[in-house]
Amino acid sequence: MGITISYERSSGDGNDKNDETVINKGNSEPNYDWLDGDKFPTKIEESYRLYARHFALKHVCHGNFTAPLKETITKGSKILDVGCGSGQWSIEIAQMFPDAEIYGIDISPNFPFIAPYNCTFVRGNILCRLSFEDNFFDFIWIRNLYAEITNKDWPPLMHELKRVLKSGGIIEQHESDGLGFENISKTYRSIPLGRWGGRIGEINATNLKQAYLTIQPWLTPFTELTEDEYNRTIKQIVDKELNEYHSYTNHHIILVKKTISGHWWFS
Image (cartoon, rainbow, N blue to C red):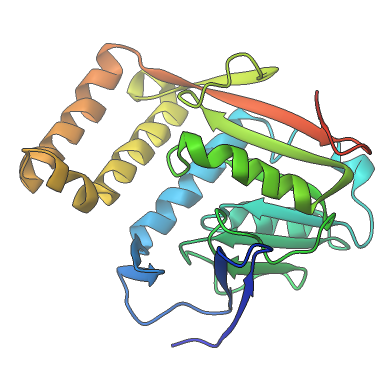
């Protein structure tokens, strides 16, 4: 067991609570963890998958962000990584901006044991009220939450992020197809899935396969497939169909800025 410091803060209406924990080390169960009655995978394979996905997307997007951070982030600036996963993006940003304060929050504690002094990881539910003051962050980063957030949860989440974002602050969001961003996205990258797309295609196909294998315990009870049948189906899709049909996904990049009046401005 590692050292943890827990604290709780309720929302303004007293109904939603976000039990957040500042994590310094992992917990005693090697494969799964629990939060508010929900079970989450914490296998080392899942951490590897998140690392691989980070570096693949960083390569495709030519860096860790497209917002003008080098011109806007100064000493004392605060940056939030929403759904930070393995925490690799937070660590790299903390190293790039050593005078800024970086916060990563995620419901599953796949956090690194060692992080820069200006990087803090918090375990918590982003769908509850965040334990940050109004107008706290200069920049908020979101990536690949389309599979974790339902359509009805996006508006309250964005409203909460708007609350903690400073006037003039920027939210940068990266998501794949399936979230309905076609009419908003100004920029996107087409990412190959499979051997036909070279090394990046192989990495992304393997990442997709591992993601579906990770959630297998949750999906098979809702299907008529056994565990072996499920695994064979995923292998068939990744090893054959992705290459046969030259499958790919579009990775959308969205920048929004909070105006002084509190409204969104899309760039």
